[in-house]
Image (cartoon, rainbow, N blue to C red; front, side):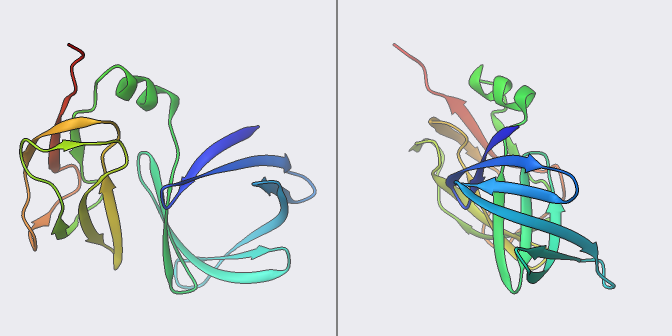
Length: 165
């Protein structure tokens, strides 16, 4: 089963080569044997090709946030229903996947943005995450300001789809 994941805005091809006797992934053509174990403090220990890493992970609707050995990574994946909704022009409100604080705002009302443009940087659970435009659009409203706290589900930015004229 081949997947295309986005790792810090870079597409990666991932294929599950085998599940038994152990998980083997093929990432961008490189084979990786992966073993996962629960760790004492709520994290997990992952062993990849014999190298051990301590990991915290947070799952959201279309992203996985990882803290691995002191570095933070954001992995995006496309749920088929959410991708179809975005392609049809839905999902104009970008909502917070978790509670947090706005670190910086990089967009203004009325601004045209391209797909992948960083709109905000937010911090949650000691991780900084870029909120990016899922498609080209116009910023309809920015609902937050720098240093503002927000709850899970809060609307951060509203987009207006581009129209073909």
